Amino acid sequence: MNMNTHINLGGMDPDGNPLALGEGMGTLFFLLLIFLPLFTSTDTLSQLLSSLSFSLSLSLSLSLSLSLSLSLFVIIDFFSVAISVSCHTHLPRPRKGSSTTTQILS
Image (tube, rainbow, N blue to C red):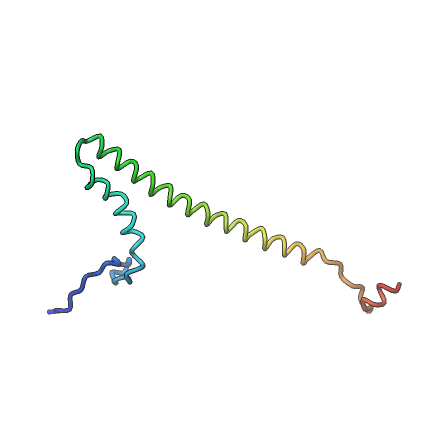
């Protein structure tokens, strides 16, 4: 019987191994963002629904802005590579058997 029990705040990976503390904190943050307003305003059903919709829209907007910034970074990186490749392939090449000094003088 294993007596080494510990509290795992990081969660589990798909293989069932415990994750480090920082690896599961994003999920914990979004769960707190969604369910924390539910515990703070329990007066009426409309307040519950409005706080749930606000927290869901906030978490969705955060994830959407993160994905948009990541896709913008990928697009900028793609175009910078494409520009550098096109500039590299369109450079004038020297004629065979001649150096650049003889090309300039001729």
